[in-house]
Length: 144
Image 1: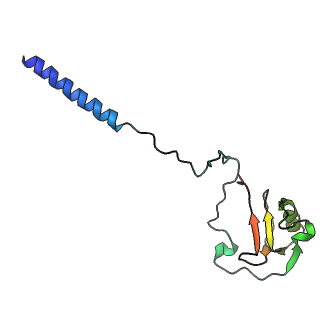
Image 2 (image 1 turned 90 degrees about the horizontal axis):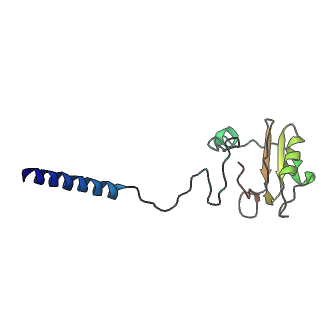
């Protein structure tokens, strides 16, 4: 009789442990998205760029931008605001045409549809205005 009680006690403990493990199993929660993968499935590519804006701006944003003369107007290179067409190539041509100075981007919305790279020091992109009705650089899709 004592053996039967001992075996029953072991079975009871085993059942309690199994029930506890089953209850502690991970449950499916609401679906979450990584910062690297968007809701629409867009992927960050390891060979692509994952921008770090922590030091963006002239002297990491700790000094005011110097007031440099306009060296080129992006409109002269084909950048037309508010026309619903990509402006990256025209802005890049304006940047590449100068050694230093400001590239003027007139009021309106410019569509940035590709990377823009400033390869020389002393070049500034200057918009007209910093509020509603000023210059807006619109990036419709992730860059990486």
